[in-house]
Amino acid sequence: MATKMAGAAMNLAKRESSSLCGKLETDVEIKASAGKFHHMFAGRPHHVSKATPGKIQGCELHEGDWGKVGSIVFWNYVHGKCKVILTFIGKKNGEAKVAKERIEAVEPEKNLITFRVIEGDLLKEYKSFVITIQVTPKRGGPGSVVHWHVEYEKIDDKVAHPETFLDFCVEVSKEIDEHLLNEE
Image (cartoon, rainbow, N blue to C red; front, top):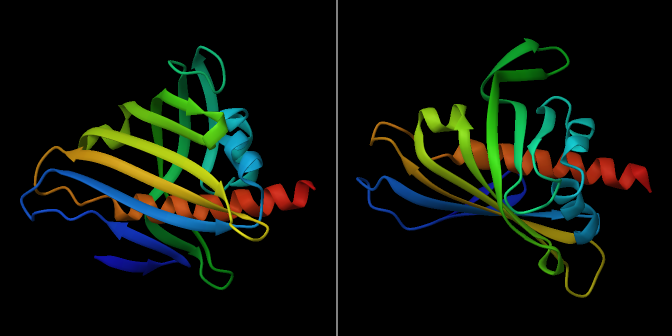
């Protein structure tokens, strides 16, 4: 099944209604280079909060080195049910959340990084949650495509598939793109 979502195509992996495991993917077209976008997550994720202050409040290194396999990073972010604060200017927020993640793969030549959630709010609803971000240059022109791939296992059938998390990733991608373009 394919669905249009916030200017990005989201592909939902085929799944049975009773299945607890799933995969979600989406692509986001950006104007920034693949290398610069990848470097925001691999080399300087602590700068992501500067690009997306309404969504990501911070990223701290708990163990290891930025962008190295086995390193542990801790994210503070806002996600979930949005509440309109000031409807006349359209500002929204969600719930403050945290995620402690281990970097499982980094492939600079492919602009790829994989994070496994090891603690935090996502593990209240999912037994496992793995996020892979790969950025590829657009063919025949400027810009890039950010590919988000999420693999997860829900704790039970009552937990929703994380489509809203993928929406969040699309929004974060667009804000990082804007930030990177303004840096030039």
